[in-house]
Length: 483
Image 1 (cartoon, rainbow, N blue to C red):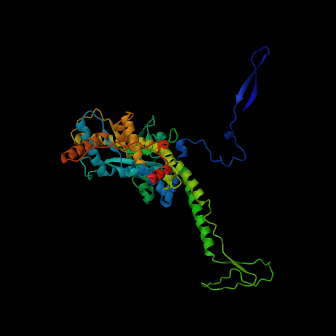
Image 2 (cartoon, rainbow, N blue to C red):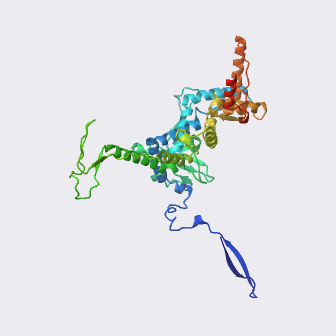
């Protein structure tokens, strides 16, 4: 940071006033011979210009290839979908009518099972990870085994595109590839190609359906203001996946090369020395348990197997850790290996991951589930005679995360309930359960136990003793010996 004098003549009389102007200099804004190549690809493109159709096509194809051929990439994407969606969301209505709430919840569960809603949501989350975005079209399907004929049709991001021959349509200035917007930035319509661009049907590639925005669900993460199409979640890790596979294959090739040479003959004699002449690369066959005499001046040896090196595990661990970071996923989940973890570090790493999962689920509720529920209720009120629902208040429950130590969790739960620092609704929500449903089921069980004459006494879990109150193992052994 430097101080630069600035001179200004402020009065006609010739009096000179000196003003100091601060000009800050940032190292990261400097272009030097050392960093010129590193920042060569930095640009000032807008979000939509940077993610133009060709860029998104290349990224999608590479991400799909990596997920299809890399075991770690496939496992990471599947784990992410399973953790975010799980067995599927569960609906709890919060209207003033208990009868209407129970009817809606029961029928929605049956409908979700009929259309395989959890499976489609998991597919959408996988598509978001490798394609950058997921699309679903709401339509009526008469073949559904449910009174509600609403259904979801998943389409790949490749099919949401505007053919180049149609770019001159009215309002193109407010459109991004495949999506039309109003002046306020709200989607108005989506262009869905009748055929997938990769299906080989060239003639159908120019034909598309213009679907209203109310019937299309678009799930993606906007990383920049004004971004209207998604990029793969694993995009920053694509080069790392390639490096990981190249390194593994190189180590295997080096180990195989060393293993393929059983015995190597070498001599210390100089060129033209007295060692017996042997043709280079001559092969000799050895029989088991035989004494073999080598030519004069030649000594047999074996190639040392130096691969994999001791840093092999460390390198793979660091690469995987960097890959998983862009997904807020800890290493032991990405690698499915917790051998280097203790209980405390595992819990600490999972906190960031589970918080990211909750954010993902909240985004899914807003963008996907609430849209589906609104369309479902519009048909359900007519089919089941619910009348007009003035209040459609509701909440979604997701699968809870199992605690590593159930005994400690049960003790902590009992303490929270006893001290009135939590509620049954909050504790059941941690497990992804509806507290009203669980209490009704528990009441039925208790009533049946009384009817059958079974004991229903329950003992509250005991809190574990603090570490300073636990007797040492040596003291326990001495007490047993004395007894």
